[in-house]
Length: 197
Picture 1 (cartoon, rainbow, N blue to C red):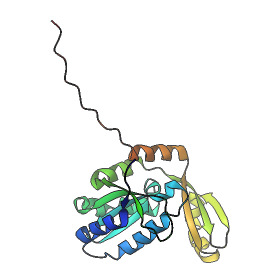
Picture 2 (cartoon, rainbow, N blue to C red):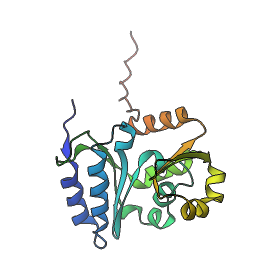
Picture 3 (cartoon, rainbow, N blue to C red):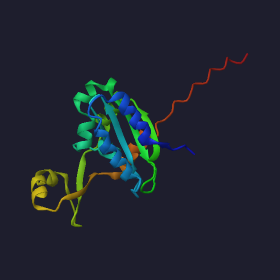
Picture 4 (spheres, rainbow, N blue to C red):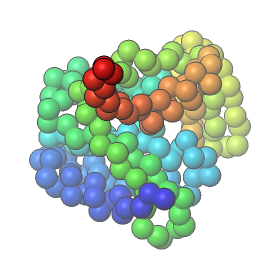
């Protein structure tokens, strides 16, 4: 079984070394990662995180692979791609835990420059959006309706607690994420045997 690490401690060290300004961004990351320990849905405990010279970003991995979401648009921003050699990126998987405990989990280093090209090539379009409002109401609508009525939703409804983006085919997204998390390892080639005499 793979050993779990104190992910906050490790990421904090990366921020101190790599993020020269806006280190306070990491405070928001810590809050989200701490809350993720209590999340019953495993998919909601898997994130992509980046440390760049000016700040950090933390997004659910599934949203990064869904086009037109804030997560996708930010992760693939041309300014970040231009400074790919200065970005430290990781897949962060938070282990289930209890309130007040250390945030344990796994960190998988990513080559941001290579990974962002896969994201741009493989990301799926959003088909529909489910909104959970603070008053308890839930609404599901097409992505087109969501974007065209966004201002109305923000002004005339209770505050939005969570937004869940869905592709046309959830199985396709699951397969894509599985492949990202479990890349095929190239087997070493066996040397050819000399021909029998």
